[in-house]
Amino acid sequence: MPEGFGTCGAHFGEVLQGAFRDRVGTLRPALVTLPAPGFQSQVRFTSGGEGVRVRSACGDRRSFEKVLRAVEGAAARWSPDGKTGGEVLVSGGVPRGWGMGSSTGEVVAALRAVAAAFGARPSAAELARLAVRAEGASDPLMFDLAAASPLFDGRRGETLEEFGPLPPLLVVGFNAGPPEGVATDDLAPLLYGERELRLFESLRARLARALLEGDAGAVGEVATQSARINARHRPLAGFPEAVDLAHRSGACGVSVAHSGTVIGLLFDPFSRESDPDAAASRLREVGREVVRFRTDGGESGGPPEAQNLPRRRTRSSR
Image 1 (cartoon, rainbow, N blue to C red):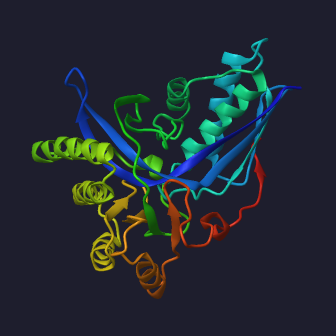
Image 2 (image 1 turned 120 degrees about the vertical axis):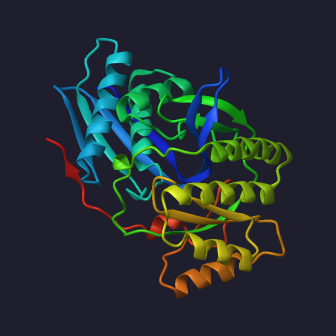
């Protein structure tokens, strides 16, 4: 029986999120994500039998349904005989409900597993379209975020503009919400005012320039301003304190998950004027569980973040 394995990374909120004009002037929701390469979703797909059976370390029914839809659609597309049955095993260490793209990660990993089983080689753009069909809205985790930073409309699965890659950033982050996360699927889209829309276009231009120049400080400023705008509509506990701590520890800025609960202090890993260790210590002093990583996968100076995540029992869908 054909078998395939797929993986997908995660993210730790957004560098920029808002509403932007596309090439024909249509206003569309879009974001630039902050990659978190140390977290990963993994899926193994074995073709055969009737129907799709999903086993997962997470008991979230909606997660089962999204992965199931993704596998059925992918198998119908790539299977030589059009049969869609098979067994799916989902694993990995991406917390749910924190705004880290756990749902998209599982869906994209599932699509890649099915593609591998049948010898298909889908492009990132094709994976984006299939992921949106399965989820309704997706993060741009199917793209090579080490090579470029797409301004991505997750509801259509389309890139509005492609920026250069992020400069290396050291992230000292934490979950500002409950450990079990929040129901991110239930959050309504945000509606911005005209002044905010103008600010987003300004931030878009600033980010494009910052990425072209590899300016970590400017990237951090954009992330903080984007977070401030969105905090007016969807306040996140811990954000004001994070901004203050970022200032005191010499961080470039602060990123948040605009549809989740994680907050990241962004540091230039090559700066001698910042103190990420002090920031991490202060967060631990106030009871935060600290996550520490580099967006380029480099040495973060902290323990592997995935080792600190809670383990969950494997369950099966019926």
